[in-house]
Amino acid sequence: MFVINAGFACRAEVFVLANGGRISGELLNRQENPRKQYIVKVPGEGQITLAASQVEQVLKRRSEEEEYDKIRPAYPDTIEGQWALAEWCRQKRLPLERETHLKRMIELDPNQIDARRALGYIQNDGQWITQDELMIERGYKLYKGHWVLPQAIELLETNAKLESARQEWIQNIKRWRGWLGTDRDSQARENFSDITDPMAVKALLLNLHGDRSVPAKLIYVDALAKINTPEAAMGLAVVAMEDPVEEVRQTCLDRLQTEKRPDVVDYFVSKLRNKKSSNATINLAGFALGRMKDPSAVGPLIDALVTTHKLTIPKAGGDGSMSTTFGNGPGGKGGGMTMGGGPTYINKQFANQAVLDALAAITGVNFTFDQSAWRRWYAAQKKTETIDARRD
Image (cartoon, rainbow, N blue to C red):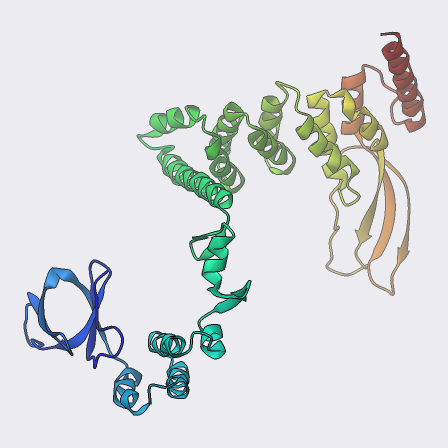
């Protein structure tokens, strides 16, 4: 890096060079236009000429810098004088000049504590050492402004590459989505069908959740199913529960039921067990588990055959509405209370038909909504399985 007279020059401008260096001095050929070269007078160095291509930027000096050049000679070259000038520079926000005087204090007295601390030194085993030197000694490396261990740098760079790949897929899929329904429709569909890169999952899911076009959504579903990673499968499971379009939900389940997926089954079971799940959500989860046909879901399905939900009934004459939407299944017993003349809250039991259908599909038996009968049967099955396991 090329730097001339960075310390005490009487500067008019700072010339930032293309190679990263800086030159401080006075521009002599200010009127030249168009600019072909810079003729610069550098105090103590004479006159130099720079081609215009060598200079990236010309920075004007601050008034504080001009004042600094004037007052600097008045401060003696002593510990006290250099400290006073360093403090003046700190107040005027001249960090490079301040550092120059702090370093001069250390030259005058290597153990000068104020200067050492101001420059970031600490004592380590009786020796003055900078924080940077200490971190290097401990095996850390400076990476994008932070001290990290080499193995962490490798991980950060790997994650950065992965995120870059994900962002590239976001752009690709956005572009191909724009081709659908145009003269490039067939090319877009072919591109989607050729996706196998797991890095595309995030982009496909973003579009699947945000796109209103059902045909486009079905294309994303097929692409995710082809990728078939755990992340892609879980994304389809979420859409199977949340998408407002039945065809999209059904298609997700069509793709998911082709193989055993314990993590997906656990997700649907969590919806059954969640105390905040609505009756509609429980029936959707029950339907999904019926399609998955995983025996591990039998116990949770029995528990969810009949569930209780709080309904909000608005005050007579008010403009409120029902706060909970309920799915299929006959109603049951309920009771409620009124809160201070406001809306009425009642607890109501619901028998969940989709849950019963799932149990029947998985087990091959049907005890309707009699949870006690289901639990007796299930306990007997577990007992038989244990006896058979011991015989084996």
